[in-house]
Amino acid sequence: MSSIMTNAAALTALQSLNATSKSLEMTQARISTGYRVSQASDNAAYWSIATTMRSDNQALSTVQDALGLGASKVDTAYTGMNNVLATVGQIKTKLLSTIGQTDAAKAKTQTEITALQAQMKSFADAATFSGSNYLSVTSTQVAAPNDGVQADSKIVSSFNRSSSGAISLGTIDIDVESTKLFDSGLSTAVKNQGTLDRQTSVYSTAAAQSLYDNAYATALAGGATDIAANTAGQTAAGAVTKVDNVSAYNVDITAAGVTDDIITQMIGKIDKVMSQLTDQATILGAAKSSIDLQKTFTQSLMDSIDRGVGQLVDADMNKESTRLQALQVQQQLGIQSLSIANSSSQSILSLFKNG
Image (cartoon, rainbow, N blue to C red; front, side, top):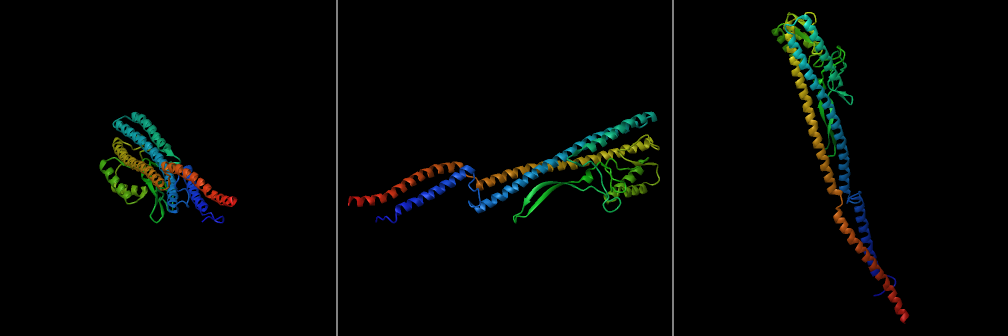
């Protein structure tokens, strides 16, 4: 039936053309943005996942920066520690050479030792990066005398999201209290001095020195202050000739009461300091290794997230390009079909003209 009120063929052609035009717009949008899902209306679930993961990836980028900064701090401290260790080794060698020397020769050697002591202090003070120094610190009293310790230095190492969406941060902690070489805090505030400025007693006999060192170490292991540990050590050693308040930083072979026997025990003290420095360097080295591993993992995780998000929302450009060409042809055919359908009304009019 032919009708001038309703052109069914034209309506059908128009609906087909509108559908083709809508698909064409969608395909052109995918090609121009590069995304199959660029907004929530495209696919709410995928868009939500992609948005969250992009946000997490930005957080991981910040973590990566924090790890880089932390690595620089640790590397700076490690470099300073190695230089200090080499300098202490030179002091040990100087002390060995003074056994049996004259007082005049010892005075000259002490001048060299003093210069080396100043140098290792300089190394520790200079091992600063972005305001952080793990070797030369200043502890302050917290609540009671001699309770001042250094807090751990925390390096943000991970950004985690649980299955429930809860966020947590992971850190790599640097035990600064265990790595410090100098602590310039007040003697009434600091609990334990650094490895190089911790003052102890040096005895004239190996037996007394061993008793002192063992009691001192036991007290420290039990959480005692340097002052309490020194008292425990002196009690254990008994009344034996000694020189008090000796540290690797202030050892002086020209001081009153220093004999070759005392110097021999000083050498033992310096040797133990070197062992402690080696342990401290190991702490920094382990931290540096952990940071490097975490940096590598974080970068791999970021790349993995990028790939995952891409699989969810990126457009397949080869597919979209082919689809675009097909839709353009369909659009042209739809326009032609609509034109033919509209011309049917003109055919009805020609019937009346013939009449």
